[in-house]
Image 1 (cartoon, one colour):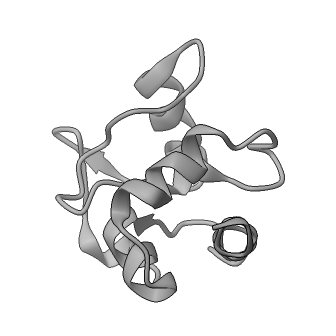
Image 2 (cartoon, helix red, strand yellow; image 1 turned 180 degrees about the horizontal axis):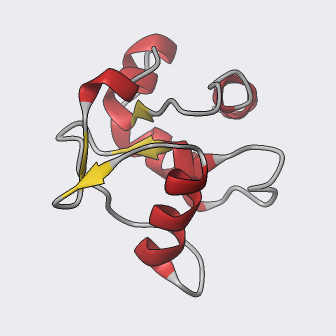
Length: 97
């Protein structure tokens, strides 16, 4: 899984400003379970270099962010990236594969 972890973290760096991806899309890309992707995000030691806030649920809902301010911080970061959030969800026009 170490190689996959590095690949997943590197992929996060390719997600452009104003775009997001989902645990499921990333899992399919790297042939792992979405929970494995979630674990990579959870243990990400460098969220500035590897922007895990850009990964959301497949339902396009904003959920879970492993910081002191949790989801509120994730929403703030997404909004700074010009991503519109309505009723806790992101429009699919913002997705990046």
